[in-house]
Image (cartoon, rainbow, N blue to C red; front, side, top):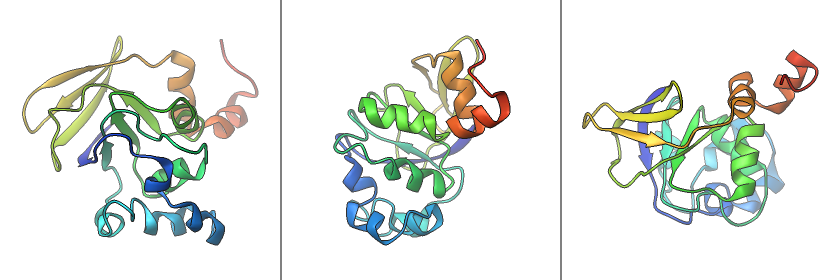
Length: 164
């Protein structure tokens, strides 16, 4: 997975990702993507490109447990979010909806950096712009398989049950 870094600070709550008033209008990911991060950066949604990676500070996805905060990110074609920590609910919603949550130090990543998420024995992030490789927390195999399948529903459609 390679993409352009789109950088936000810490404590980005779910209402900053997609305001709760927008989910009353539609739950369609293609509609919601137009309002992604509108409270933090009014131009973000128009500038995001499929494959971009969200890079944030600690506690990404805090606040309410609304799953639509993941749906809107996935709808924009963003395959992963990198942050030093996530709210537990956002982390699980991300996995269950096919969005890769990468726990790593993001302090040296800047807007526009080219990043590659590497999977081997564990996870790492290669900053192609600076040449730095950043260690990332390993994702349990079953969670990786759920993300790779596109989320929990596609995983179950394919396998019928958890493959252990």
